[in-house]
Amino acid sequence: MATLLLRGGSIAIFDYRCGAGPADEPFVEAHDDFSVSYVRKGSFGYHARGKSFELVAGSILVGYPGDEYMCTHEHGSGDECLSFVLAPALVETIDAKIAGGRPDIWRTGCVPPLPELMVMGELAQAAAEGSSAVGLDEIGILFAARFVEIVSGRKHEPPEAGARDRRCAVEAALWIDEHSHEPLDLDGTAREVGLSPFYFLRLFARVLRVTPHQYLVRSRLRHAARLLAEGTSSVTDVAFDVGFGDLSNFVRTFHRAAGVSPREFRRTAKGDRTIFQDRLSARSRSDKKRATQPQEPSGERKEGAEGQCRMGTKPGTRKP
Image 1 (cartoon, rainbow, N blue to C red):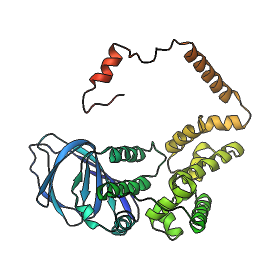
Image 2: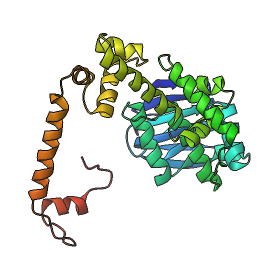
Image 3: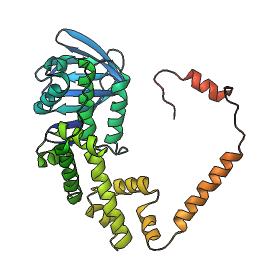
Image 4: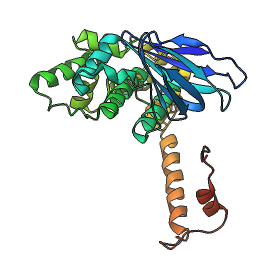
């Protein structure tokens, strides 16, 4: 089952979930586009161009347009992948900037679990679930660029931003802030300043030290804080007025930034200081309690269940 999470001009992101098992007959498929897919769960076999690969959680499946392939599930049932489908122009840009133009990289087939890619894959999954401030399209492009860096053995070090680049980044930020109430994406914003999404993302982050999506979310939060402090609109109206398309996402993002809910923030702005005072008092009590607890001598490891858990965690399990 494939679920479309995001579609832009240069990248589309899908959540793939397969329930096939050893008893299911494999069949031939073909890649329609360039793609890099992060295996987040399960395992499967991948057979293409006379080669066979076994993919497990953390592996990367690489798709090349027109290549036929077959997936098998001889060793277990089911797998889940987060797949980034890339437009040819984006692939060409990444290749030219990082690898000097090596299209053969995209016929790698698969990449084994590597920490450099696994951590970005998990960041992408967090973005897909709405628990990261990084845009899903942004992390998709960065993920593809990191894949090319690793396979090509070349790390692209962008030059120091010049005056023109800095002006471009600042003007883009001003445009984002002015239009933050609108449904913006990376492709549209990059097109507004006349750059490719890949180059714009790196330029913006290099100059302003935040990604375009992070700046967009923070602009919306800033406008929301002003409306909550000075206006009388409901929290729902504020959320939609500043550009959040989902109320629960707005409440969660605002609480993470402010430490209080939008409703509590409004009460504080109207003169109710007990909310922040209560939080400060609670933190103070917590700090005092922590300070009075006996400290474990350094260099000694606590015995018992906790120590056994650290040493005896089974492969494939996660700590809560």
